Each structure stands twice: as C-alpha cells, then as structure tokens.
Length: 464
Image 1 (cartoon, rainbow, N blue to C red):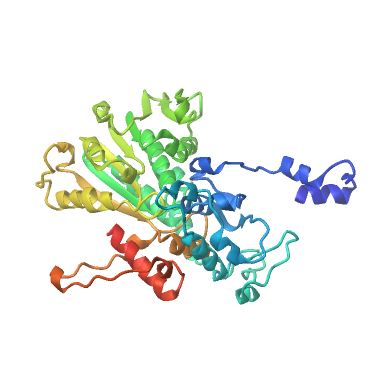
Image 2: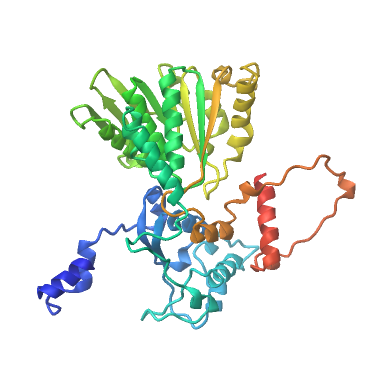
C-alpha cells in the first residue's frame, strides 16, 4: 500500500491502465493455502490470516491458523450473506457430512452456536459488512481503542519490556563467549535464551548420558531453540547428530534455525556445509541431512522413530514433538548419548500427558535415585543411569504474554485444560457413594458462564 501511495503522489499511477488491487497482489508476499494443507504453515508467522470458506472450518483449522498471526495482526473470517448471526447456528458445515449415518441423519451444530456466541462476547472482535461498516452487534465495540504508545512508537506498559531488558543484558554478557554468544543473539525471548544456554551447557559437558526435556505450549519457539542448540553442538565438535520427528516436514523450522545458527557461528553454505533434501514425494523436499566439513566430517541426519537401531553411532539425539511419537518408540531411542527431548504440552495436536506422566516422570525418578530404577520389561536400558533436566518455555514469540486472542482461542477449544488439573483426593470415594448425573448437551455447549466452567472441568478430567 505504501508503494501504491508513493506512485500516486508522483503521478505514476494511472487508474485506467493499472488496477491498484493487481499491483497490491503482485507486490505483496501472500501465502495461499488450502485448508487440507494448513499443517504446512505451522511454525510460520503472518501479519494477517483470511479464512475464506466458513462452512469448511473445523476446530483444528482454527487452532492451526489463528496462532500463526503475530501481535497486532488481523484474523478475517469471510461469511456469506446473512440476515442474522443466528443463521450460523444451523449452517451446514462440510464436516457434518462425515458424521451422518443411516441411523442418525440429523446433525446438530452445537460448536457453531458456541463459536458465534464466543465471538459476540469477545471484546476484540468486529463484525463488518462488505463496505467495511462496523455492525452494532455488541456494546463491546464501543470500548475498542488503540493501545497507548510513546513518542518513539513503542507500547507503553509493555508486559514483555522487563524480560526484553534482561534478554539484552544476557546477550551482552555472553558476547565474548562462543558459540553461546552468537547463538543467543538469535533468540527472541528470555525463556528461549535460557533454554538454549541450558542445552549448550549440557552439550559442552560431553557426558553422553544426559536427557534434557523441553516442554511448552505452541508458538513459544521450541523448534527454533532446538535448531540453534544443534548448531551449537556442531560448533562444539559433535560429529554424529540424529534428529527424529513424526515426519521430516515437522522439522522445517528446526532445520531453518540450524542454518541460521551455523551462519551466526561463521559457517558458510557450500563451503563449510551443505544440505540434502528428501527425494520422497510424500515428504515434500524436506531437509533430511546436513553435511558439515569445515574441520572434520560432521552430520545432522533425520531418522524415522521406528529405526532406533540406526542410532548406534549417535553422540546427540534430538526428538522433536515427542508426544506425537508412540511412547515405546521414544523409550527405545534412549541410549548412551546426549538426548534433547521436545514436546508440545498444550495445543490442538494433543496435551503430551502420556509423555509427561510416564516417560518424564520415570526419568525424574531415575535421576533422583541415581539410576537404580529399572524400566519396564522390554524397554531400552539406555534410560537407566541418566541425568535429567527440564526446561519450560512460557513466553510466546509472536505476540505479547497474556494475548487476549490466544486466551479466547484456548477457552473456546479447551486447549489449556491440562494446566488446571486438580490435585487427586487423598482417598477415592466408594462407587456406592458417588452420584450419576445426566448432562444435557445443548446446555453444555450453550456458552453460559456456569456451563463453560463445567465444560473446562470435563476437559480437564479427560486429559488428567
């Protein structure tokens, strides 16, 4: 838009010959994506997201797309002609076709009603017509105002200002310590920098019986921290590094930051390292190998989770999205080498409860007991006698802490239910003293304050 305005001011824009919209599309980086390909945009950041087909929306699509928009961005949902918002309660969604059977021909769209009611009560939501007139659907729109900024354009009362100041101090203190200084300079948040320093400390110890577990919600920079940590391990001399994930397509962000970390450490592509892309059409030319040959031969190799036998020569194993890998496979991959474990604990992909309740708890007990605790029969013995450290990322990358749109999305989809787990009772009641209640589904999804609290508690029980 700035370019178009400059051309108009200079008299170079002829509206009869050049279409401003066509110029805008040609000069703007727009990422077009089908709904069934939205998993490919995970880990990317955009300033605006336009969801064009409302009837094809699903909770998974909302979770994938909305959280890719940065702070200050806009999420637009395009709707067809409506006389009233209540029409959306009964609109036929594409997903309903999969739910109809011979016995159940009628599908009640309870999620639609709850979605519309949540949007109507969201103080950061506007409903506009095709002429961009704000429709008076709620009194909350009267209170929408820009955030206060200072003369320099920066936000006043920025909740992340204190942590950013600490991050600047940390970067300056590590400036003379390599490779940590060069890699930490690429971090965006204080949590991410602390996690990277922890990874580099473990890698510099060269004790190949350590496990580091990194857990966080979506959008906290886990894969970026892992990628920078791998670059640091290469700079520290690790020769055989293996990376595993459910699919190599999930490692795009990780390998992107491996290359950024190598560049920060002074490595040059084609001179000090090169990359190998997959020839498997199902993997979409994803990077599966990095060859480093500056001082000696070093490799970063992708390996599928079921191929644990290929890890015999490993010095470092990085497991990304461990919660999406079957737990027996994760246990089988633990061996006499350094292990970096990463998982999403809150998000539409899952809660990671199996990983945190079983494997991480077992690693805690083994580290506390000096490696005396034995794993279950048939499990790999590589988990015994390991030191264990945990790292958690809380501060988001794309937007400020406590972002209202993220809070709205998490409440709508019950994504943060795992963080509100109640403590188990000291003594479980006898079944004869328990009471059984019938829950009306229409009431449960009515978006009433009491029913929302009950729905969150039900979701908490399901992930407990």
